[in-house]
Image (cartoon, rainbow, N blue to C red; front, side, top):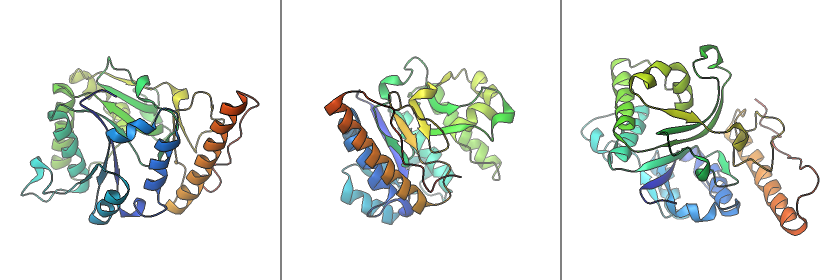
Length: 264
């Protein structure tokens, strides 16, 4: 992985404890195809002190996100969405490009070579650009890449200003932003692209292709306990699958046991 590029995830205490989603997330890197070396480039951002303390016990690169740890936020009391956005501003201003991944996204293969390096933003998002009717039906893969440059930094500053001026504005994912604020991206001349649909998936999706899937998210899930249960099944199945193909080569179609509890 290139210098000045980092992988980032964010967790609170509910997802950071023994046997938690964070443990499964790290396990996916250790057992994925070509993903184990990426752990040295992974920064886990803790959203509270308990998550930070647990993170330090399982991973060497942890950061506690707080008003005192963000340069732009010092002497202020910012909401969590604003804190997160200020974090992205600082990362891009420091010259780091980054891959963001939700912690309930399992890395089965390394998706980074699939990122379109020619465009500043790549999003795992299954949607037709500009289709406002699709905002409630999008498939958000919980994964995006942002290249550090003047325009991407300007975009995150716009998001900060919007939330300050419109305190009741919705906290949208970057996937949703590309749909709702398409005109803004054009105004900023900020080019983005969507990842190939067969590279990522989720529990909402049927018939996941094991030969192409890179990341898989525990969506269509109502609670953390169900996520943990089904992600354990997923990783067990993946380990059995990779062991089988390494010993026997490609064979009959593979059937996932997950989702079992995560069905929306």
